[in-house]
Length: 182
Image 1 (cartoon, rainbow, N blue to C red):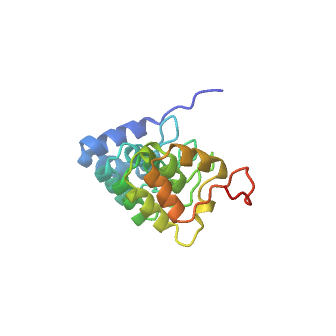
Image 2 (cartoon, rainbow, N blue to C red):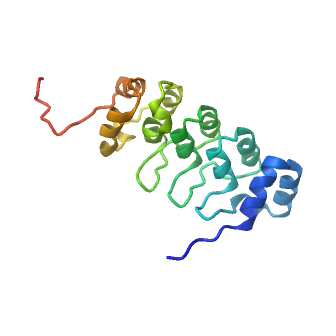
Image 3 (spheres, rainbow, N blue to C red):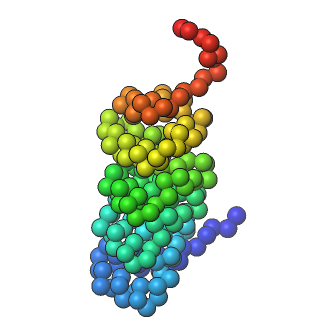
């Protein structure tokens, strides 16, 4: 399998957005499609900067027309990945600007399942998870988390995370009969 090449405009724009907004603006004015340039794993500058939790840069790129729901080569969106990393303010911005809370990556994960099982889930802070659950509206929480992931979440996440999920109706279905009364 051949390695995918990065578009050099990706790096130029990413760096300019961080270091020199006037230059970034000149780049976008000269070539509006540069906001869609991708690196070797399919990230745009907005996606990359969201994963780095650079909110100001993401806000600026979004205002310049960058796609909030861009997907990398693994199907991950900025919202899904920021959720996994526990970036509350980044996720709040992305949701306010129309990010798709239901978008699934190639493994079937979404923002809610990413937050419940991500690196931050070992933490007791549940504000991000509560915000994401509120964003799914009337959707059943059990439809947001793959059955195979539930056991891992229950086993590995902080008890506060598990408590929030259960409060919102998450059901841990095990291979034991539901008629067990132990």
